[in-house]
Length: 136
Image (tube, rainbow, N blue to C red):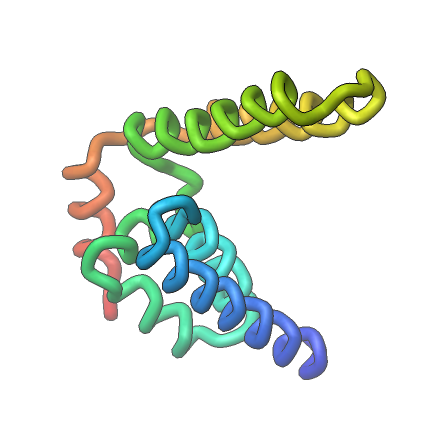
């Protein structure tokens, strides 16, 4: 991979980590999706930063299971879909007036829902067990 691409992915990954940290403090902003995006950026740019990211106590196993094995828990799927559906529905009902502006969010929701539901569902114990099996 080109050095410029690696640098850009590292910067982008760091930005996502910062957004995830803000989301950890602010209840209205999600944390895990930003950290997963950071993991995707880091695994393609900096193995050292990726290793540090997946060592996080609460988020590390989830990030690792998504990035490396495309598996998540049922709870992750449920919360992810709720955090997408609820704000979008509220926005569509109370803010968006024209039908043309409703199409893009609906298409986005369909694509994201398909992606989330296509991930393998595992229980939390399996994620922890699989993350412990991998070498450091």
